[in-house]
Length: 434
Image (tube, rainbow, N blue to C red):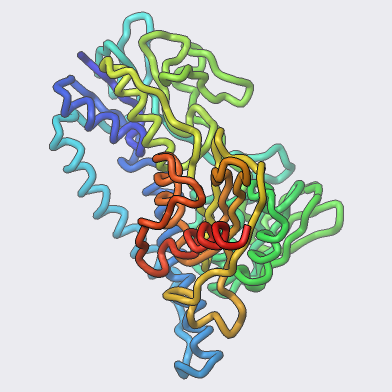
């Protein structure tokens, strides 16, 4: 089978390798860089910056309690250069990994002729039996006067120095992550939210903990109307806030390539069925371009579901329990999905004083974990964890829940302290006291 995949991010690249290993003729087309938005603009960039951020905050804490006698200075230009150098190395590695499976990797801007069933790149035609669209997303630019004056996540590696003041527009994970990064590096940060900060968590206690314990030099402005963005400020209905402006206002799908070929919703997300098939039976789509829960693992899962259905292995995506993390000095991990529920009793325990949190114990910054448990069925319906290792713990927990384990079924689970014990301790608490 001739399969053409457009977009070499997590959804497209893993799908391409899988299909090639199954004996199909696979062409993977990428307009710019292999690895997609995750490696080149978003997730990996945030992780790289956050490593530096955590080092600075740890050093500051050690200095405050007298363990070390100085706090390091940073060279922002050196940080961004090293991130770019590392990205180049990773791109080289994953390109080799991809083509070694038999994938033909093409770089260039693609167009689709659905009538002839070909994709055109650099005046070359690539015929397909099935086409998979994994073109991802781009920063959403809101309809605000002067929005062109603002930066987006694509621009953080282009800055020459840490801004003295930065104004972040948006109330979601990206806004929180960049607030944590730049505030640790010395910026005064203002976050402007149209409604509520971190509404996705739906937990005022978690929001308060994040703002007071995990974000330094940061002011949150909720329920604000923005009138104009200048090159040095944001003008709101409450007045003007000065600083370099960074948009963190979500993303928009890169669906233009097939917008006249397949059905899309009003926001431009490609509409797919349970098998990732579009309104055109020979075209599938996966990842950010279809909307939904936007994360690298979800995109990868959707790409694999699409390609398995393309080659005749019928399967569906599992959106029942999806672990999500906001990368801050402590990971803030939570659940999304069709099986997440607030039904039951919510219990809470403080985080363990182990690696990553021991030296903050005197400042009462150990984080916490909450679980919501159905008292009649013993089912764990929701989890929120603010701990150094919560991004490791939640996937283990989800696996246990999907395997049928309930709140009183974890006696045979032996964790590596403190990776998951902050969560599993809650199940022990539940058995003893509820």
